[in-house]
Image (cartoon, rainbow, N blue to C red):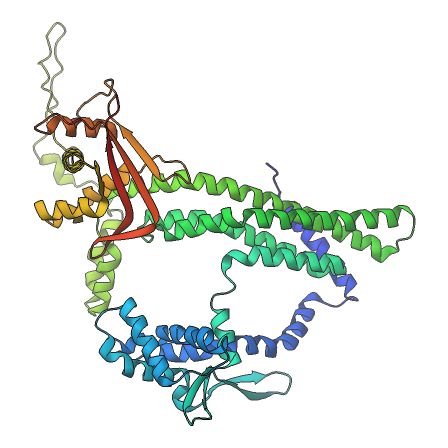
Length: 546
């Protein structure tokens, strides 16, 4: 692996900045930043002003009713309808059409909301129109030394030829809707690579250097994302695998495209590099071009570093699967660990405006005890301890008694193993039907019908389902648990799922002919067994293998 020393990079950066300053005619880079700021400020404010309406709607959110408080979020739904059914079809939409759509959409999204749809659509339209007035953003213009008002209008109303009021989305509304989604974090590497290529082609090497530095930062940020995801998982901040899947997709799906762009960028740099080499060797380069050649060599080093980091991204994605699985295992073991929620207790004290002295009960256990280093002379008159006399030579020591203490860990482990055998036995019973197959939904429903909802809400049930799917290769959705092998050791620990199923089969009244269970997962289908308990859908098949 290629390594880069920080001191060498710092020297290259200082040299590159000096060359860029020379190419600007001796202009101070910091003053150049200030001038760019003046030139770009108004353009930047124009870019951000379309976000002002949504911030106002969030600030003025009405909390008096259940559905009125959702107005800021639902405005995106209305804007989407105005774009796809109005703007793209070159027509306006009446209030009735908007009401019909919102009612239909809310029935799909939420329950018990049809009655509130008319009032809700009125609130959304009122919010997007700022009560019939344009949104006004006041900014300061440093060139003129005065304040300036910028107007924003997301939707507008026009009267049709039939004297019917119709709603249209404005260009600013379309701009706002697209900007909130169309340029995701995952595309930043691609955007910077394309920008870098254009700058190299035009000979804007100073800008190309800034772009390649920014590109390095984006690649490194994407690489470091893995550790923040693992940390969030370990501390319970990542309860679903969506962020994990999104990270994998952003690397695996875009890797080939980005790798191709990197190769093109490196070729462009090499082409420019050799052009300057030929020019210098033929004596056609002046002093300024020689200095520019030094900058190109630094850019070549930086783009090579970025390409190396990008190649390591794929390795990180592959190793992330195993590390993520290990973190899930640690989380599963930590479910039964008793913890003290310091943050909740601290916030409770603060919110109740309790006495400050109460804080000491939270912080004292975290401090080392303060023990004064002194000796009380009265201790000399206290009864003294008598040291036990050592056994004389030849005396036999008393026999030691081995005490097998049952710890909390042992009790928890015993309970988990027992529950695993219970769930495996019930699954084998259900697979004894003529079809020898059962869905996860049917399995969960059987457990609730025969026992109770607690048997599905139980954390051991979730752990059992997760264990059935462990150790699969990336992209595989089928796991086979073959417990027909007579060499499987059935000890107390039941270290494998095969051992669990063997013990479960032996616990059944009759002899089960099933000795292999095939577990098939459907990643694109999510099943809600009980309120708040969502899990990837699965199918179980029982087979008899000789």
